[in-house]
Length: 84
Image 1 (cartoon, rainbow, N blue to C red):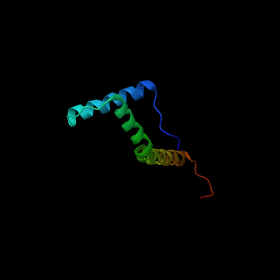
Image 2 (tube, one colour; image 1 turned 90 degrees about the vertical axis):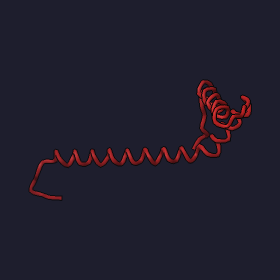
Image 3 (cartoon, one colour; image 1 turned 180 degrees about the vertical axis):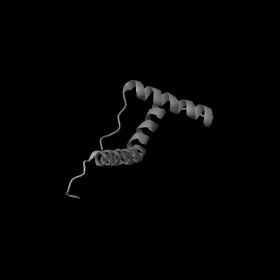
Image 4 (cartoon, one colour; image 1 turned 135 degrees about the horizontal axis):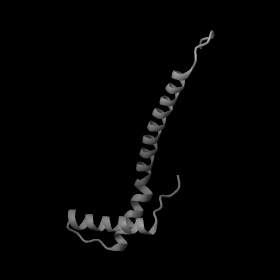
C-alpha cells in the first residue's frame, strides 16, 4: 500500500475539520501545525485500517456482481443434449 496522500485543498479542509472538532467537542484550540501533525499520524498509522476495510467492502460488492453476472449468463444458456 502506498502512503495515503491528499491534494492541498483536501488536506486544508481536513485540517480545518480537525481544528473545528477540537474547538467544538474538546473545548481546546489546536494550531495548524498540530492539526497537520495529527492528520499525518492518522494517515500513516490508522489509515491502513480504513483502507483495508474499504478493500474488503469492495470485494463483497465485486463478488456479488460477479455472481449476478454468472446467474445472468446461466439464464440465457440454451439447452443441449449435453448437460454440465
